[in-house]
Image 1 (tube, rainbow, N blue to C red):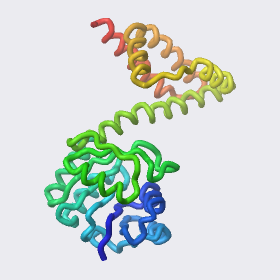
Image 2: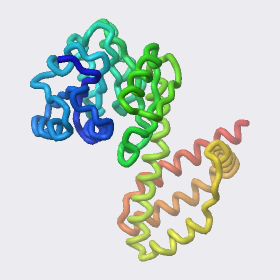
Image 3: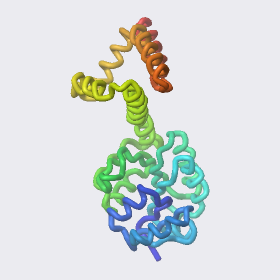
Image 4: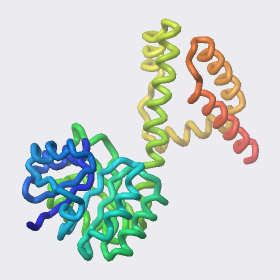
Length: 265
């Protein structure tokens, strides 16, 4: 039985896309975790009994496994791909990991596409922003649009470029999450959470990220040593409250490094 897409990995992303795109008979799926077979059936797609069955003849494959299994999946399943098939690697891994996966896929006669998913798949679903890179990115974009994806952008012909955007962006996105956790743990321990959050609301200014990044870097270059000293005291504050200042210590390091660069200019 032919299909339009094979899904390797059927976690949150795979199941969300399959349901939102209403792929049903157009898709086959494979996941090493047997309980997910029921989830595939519930979504109306055919659960394969082995990876070879899922990949047989599939013109496009969407790899959505865990990050630590992304390279292994590409290496293990590359020999099972149909000639010229598109392996769209949507896993959140480093550019070099994607380049290694591409070598395995292309050595087997298939085509590799670096795919970066830039936002949570829920609630965006088929409108989630997708970046594509690689020589076959254009063909992949055409097929993905036919499957219902609506927010795709090709960012270059070099594998790793989409991943670089995703991974570097995550430094800020996940870093803010970690800083929020550290800040709130200390604020709650000190009994000042409401006041801290209110003061942040009062000082927050809407600003494009290009402008914000330039402003932040200039402040660090000019005042990094003073800010580092202040953050040392913040670290002491957190320690006294029983909160490990992991992110705060990193801020001290970055402020000092930036100050050194500023003085060298």
